[in-house]
Amino acid sequence: MKVIVRIKPRALLTILAKNNMSQNGLGRGAGLQSGHVSQLISGKRNVSPATRQKILQTLNGVEFDEIFVIRQRR
Image (cartoon, rainbow, N blue to C red):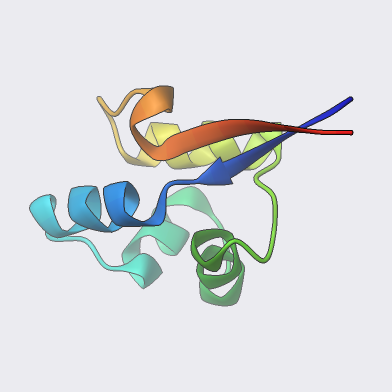
């Protein structure tokens, strides 16, 4: 089985709004291009371990389970 990690779009967008941060702001803070952030939020791309770490560091205090979901594929 393959394990993939995806972003919980509603949860992430809510956290961004509460922190007065845009998707572009998240990208700048995490060192990601805005298009990449958009693809992660829309579910078109899986979130790599390095990208997860960058996002969590940018959203200081946010826990993994708040914004990411783990799924298994066969």
